[in-house]
Image 1 (tube, helix red, strand yellow):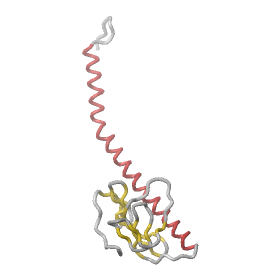
Image 2 (cartoon, rainbow, N blue to C red):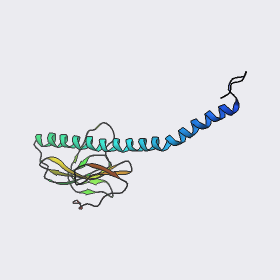
Image 3 (cartoon, rainbow, N blue to C red):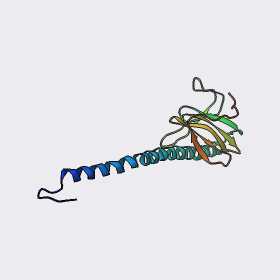
Image 4 (cartoon, rainbow, N blue to C red):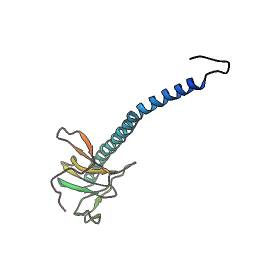
Length: 154
């Protein structure tokens, strides 16, 4: 670059601005991908935390003298577990809901399998507009659509 008595010329300044803009344009897809991936990680971590809290709540419930038979249970729109028949169309739990106390976001729908007083599996746990499931290797994954599953009791 050629310096004159007035500092940097307009052509040189334009070239610097153009190079900076090109670098920013190249970085935008990487930044957007990182933000989207981190949002998915947060949702999956919320489900993992929810599952742990359900296990803790079940243990507390049975230590209080109650019983929870092995089976499939629905998650209500409030993020609680319906221990009886559940009408998902009207969000009505015919039995006693097991209230899950959790700071942060709770799922709005889905099902859990309980075996030996622990959550053994999860199905279509809805967080925001996504569904979180476990694959055959017991790894969490996120999808835009619910995955097919055996129908739980109604």
